[in-house]
Image (cartoon, rainbow, N blue to C red; front, side, top):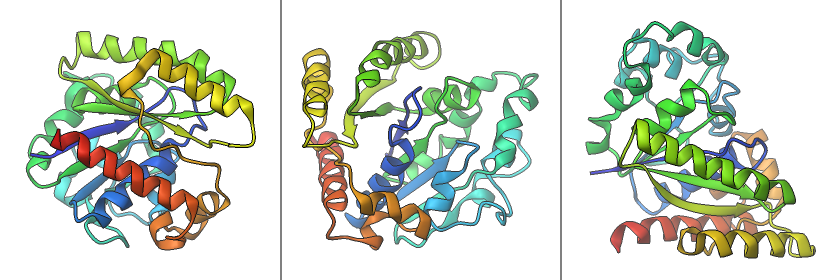
Length: 255
């Protein structure tokens, strides 16, 4: 049975989308069957995987409203073994449209029950806020992977994030666990990056991945070409880091 992992952080600009795209591509490269679900109305994961968000016939928006089935929404990507449930900007209004739905926090969970038998990994890219889309993702997930940027404000948001996880776990999804924290945008030239890593490690210990994602120009360029880093520049430091992270994620299931 597959594993559903939400890639989430209430703080924006920490590398959620970059991590979702490239971790998924690296898992697919290892022969795993992967589904990415884009629940962010900005649809950056969708465009980052080479899909035109303005030309999608069906999206997560249709899925949540019940006008399309999962098999009608899932599309292939340019990456072998990697499929996508795309997002569209209309997702921004989904929270209002779903307000009268019964058990609206569980919509995505019900949809993904059968998907776990088809895919090895289902990665959900969440919006940078605790809205109904994020709650749906966390309720449907087995675990949450948290990208943290190596800067001071990341530390301030960490306790709030852990509180959110416990709240969802207590009220909506008792099985939810912390998959792990991955550091992003690490700059080895600054003392601050190293200090942030040590501070978070002192609080979370075994929940921190050894793989650290560096600041890397090629990682920043890849989305504008609609390519994951595995296809845009497989020899870059950024690609090496995400390959290492994928290996850790896979190894964690085998323990």
